[in-house]
Length: 393
Ligand code: COS
Image (cartoon, rainbow, N blue to C red; front, top):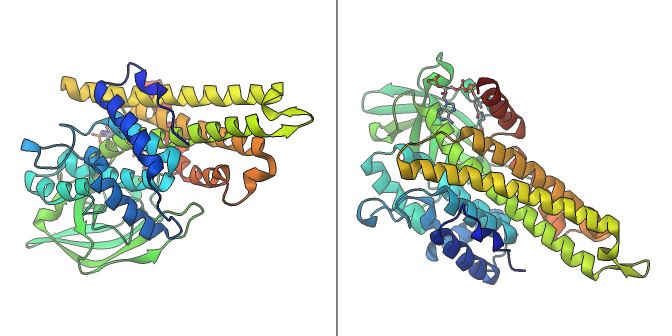
């Protein structure tokens, strides 16, 4: 099934996004990856996406193109278009691309030229798998409550603690890890570090199995020694760096949810046109038409908020005004993931028994969408961000 491309004509997009979306919509349906082993499948997708140049949109070009990126800056609309199109076909392919961006995003935003040169080209080519280690068992939404510590010593840092729910845990080549450098300063006492996967004292062997397969692990740091050069961004500036990274990637999560919702709608339309009952097609019932109408409007509402958030960030970057898009990204993520869950549920209902049959597309989408309402800031966190912004406007 080919993903829709009509939205690419909207004025949010430039020629570069249209060309990217059309090219990917042709390429992705021809790729077939065995996804029965999520770790192996994720590695395969990273290699494939790297080999064909799609990961080049996860990093900037850098001076003379040395960092490997396709565009001068990390472009939110390109990420949205890529994720929407990939998620329509394979949520795991989308995940593989998204993690290359999220895992390296803080290096793009705050890395020294040496850090960028050491990591970003490998991310763009697919030779290095990236991961973002922020959450802890008792510090998910409440980032300031993290307890993983980084203590400065002669020549470097010592990391101790544990990180939970780390995507690409166990298969990543490096982890952008957030740790407390001032244990009593809450969100103002967090710093970021780049931790190579082979660092002594890092254990990523505890895999977590989830309802929609994707590589996930707990990280344990036991007297992990890091060189001075591992510190990323300013001392105690880690919370803001994490939030700035999430501002970009939350809008792209919305793009992924949109791709899944579009797929569910397409599956529902196709099924409604084929399925016969009570002497007519399912599509001929007004109840079906009303339901499909509701689904299409939920998809378009999510699309417009998603494209707005991405456009606004890109426009701020282009004008050099670096506008914060926290509010718009929060609205996009909340609406697109919640709407997608509803659309997928409605598509499943229209499929009747087939909808719950393991192996049917709507059944896997029903599981795939669920975590998007939780990770990178749960819906409730987005509501808080929006609510606070409304009160302060
Ligand atoms: N960009 C830049 N700065 C930001 C920012 C952003 N997006 N968001 C917050 N800040 C700054 C604030 O301006 C404030 O700065 P000062 O200390 O200079 O005043 C500081 O960071 C603290 O901000 P705030 O008081 O809003 O932080 P809270 O502790 O209230 O936390 C929430 C706010 C809950 C919104 C935040 O912790 C959050 O997003 N939690 C979810 C985390 C998450 O997504 N986890 C999933 C991990 S990835 S799977």
